[in-house]
Amino acid sequence: MSGRGDDIVWAGFGCCAGAGLFWKGLRDVRIGRAISNLPTSRARSVAMGPAELIGTAASLVPITDPVYRKACVYYRVDVEKKVYSGGSRGRRADWVNIYHVASDDLPLLLVDETGQIPIHPRGAELYCKPIKRQVGWLRNLFSGVEEPVAKFLGSMPGAGGDFRLTAYILREKEPLYVLGYAAQNDQSIAATQAYPAVIRNNPDGFFVLSDESERKLAFSLAGKAGLFLFGGPVLAVGCAAYLAWRLELLNPSSWTGSNLFQTLVLIGSVVLIAYVKLTRGRGLR
Image (cartoon, rainbow, N blue to C red; front, side, top):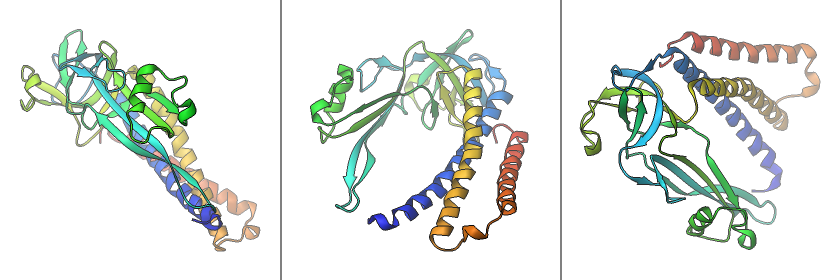
């Protein structure tokens, strides 16, 4: 792609990204409300339906993470490689996912003071601190990276390029917060047959796994939601205005301070209405 129209492409991408950030902010608000509104249940006495549980993680079946080759209760690993495209007029670099693996089909246990309950992690949103590593070209490919990570990335196809690793690994006895759906055990997984109930994906709400405390998670979501709710529309409107000017649909010289003020008021009103509507709604709906 020539550089002449790159700004239009990026402006269009900015519009979409702004809308996506706004949607993400609304979703974070709803998850935060669900966390605040739903009382904490106990593993032994959890009622069927939406449930929040707090405890520690434990293994139900033997699991070894693919990076460090150590015992864990859950993992999700992604490796991206930087791929270059375009000719001499505009060389572009993109990160392309070349490896993804997760233990989504292997249950884990949440343990609290009353007992333990299986968690089926497929479909969960992870709010955990990820392990992130990035390596460069062959001459310094594995410098400053732990030996297990270097060995793991060295097994990737196309060694010698730029790689980026993102791994979520939950170990035994680490703190575990779960927001999901308590259901009768259908006995579909042999390892969980001894348990009358399981926690799984909520088809009408949220399914969250986190190694943070309830309070810290709610605070983090509120901060990100505020940033996304206001930053998203500003980015989208700014990029849309640039597109209109670039395509000669808008003459900036004709705008007045009143026009700008009215536009900002409109954006703020839409954000405020959406925020109030969601925060007054049911937490899990």
